Structures are given as structure tokens and as C-alpha cells.
Length: 247
Image 1 (cartoon, one colour):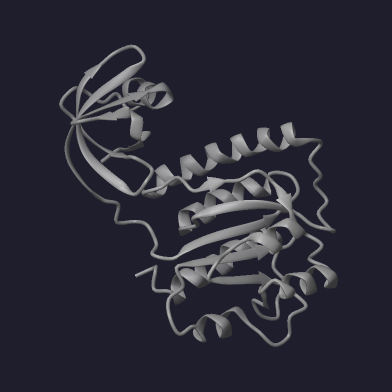
Image 2 (spheres, one colour):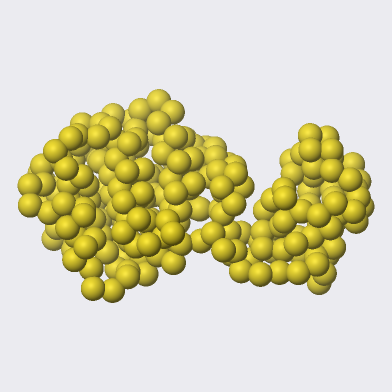
């Protein structure tokens, strides 16, 4: 059954109105008809079974038949902090990590980050595009929320102020702690996990030391060095598996 996101304000009583690109998609691409059922999600973890009542030029009106919690959201909320990668790699990271169950993504700049944003306006422009990619991936994978993509921030600001039950940094220089060892050592399932991935050139020693001072744990993913766009996906999949979110 086709699935669409609606804002809570688009829902009134037992009626929901779909507008914009989704209304166009329903009528002109999918060519759905009055009386057909679809699934609506309010982006807050609730799904609605709905039936199309009427169609206009710019909107589709539906009747809500039933509602239930989305069954696709992980119990543990994983925040990915991704150093800004080159070219279109961030788009791939967002798409795949949303599919895997990421809760939100915070782009960060580090000492060795090659990509530099011209100004705040440039950062917001990229964020808007990345948010659209997150929404499309959420639709495709049947998510109950649209993971939020934040505006880029500095490494120092992030490691100092981010709150999470478990805070880990994937660092190729780590020789003692593996991600597997840290996850298997957990006594209780964390409600939130923050995972930081460095840039193509990796994090430097001073950055790793600063993060440890603020309660972050450096971990490795084994003897092979992964690309920055691969590391987050691999680590997220491992976390979801270990926390039994892939069952």
C-alpha cells in the first residue's frame, strides 16, 4: 500500500488533506482513484489507514479509517555525526542510514575536513536538500519518522555539548576498544547512541583526546580502514544488529 507523510496540522478529526508534490504524485504518477486506500504517517511515529475521498487540482482529501503506532522505529535513537565528505557522498550516507534506522544526522567540520561551507546560507541550502533526501528515504523504507538533518556545526561544539547514553567515535588509531567489544559490554539497552565519523583524512590526535575528555569512547571497526561514507553505514548496521533492532 502506498505511503505518504503528512504534517500533524494536515489532520483534522477524521480527515487528512494531502497537498503539494505528494498530491501531484498520487493523481498524476500513481494514478490512484477515489475509494483507494493508502497509509499516512504523521512523522511522529503514528500511521493511519486512509481512503481517498476526493481530488482537486492541488490537494487530495482522505478519510482516516484507523491509526496505530508505526512498527518500524528502533527503540534506541541513534544520532550520526558525520564529518562533511566530498562531492555527493553525504547524500548517500543520509539515504542509506535512514533506511537502516538512523534517528538524526548532524554534519560536522573537523581539522581535516576538506569541504568548507562559504557561509551560514550555504549550510542551510545544503541542509534543505539533505532533508528532502531523508524524507524520500523514509518514505521508501516505511519509517515512522523523517530523520532530521541539522545544519553543520564544529567538532568542538558537538563533542562538548551533545548528550547521549552512549557516545562513540570511530577512529582508525584506536587499538584496544572495538565497536563489538563496547556493544557487548553494555548492561542495559541505551535509549540513545551518538556515533561520530571523521572525514576522509581521519580525526587527529588532539580531536580524539578532546572527545575523550567529554565522555566519548574511541572504537575501531577492525583492521581495515573504511571510507568515511562506508564507516557510518557499517557501524549503524552493527549497532542495530547488536541491539536486536534487525529482528
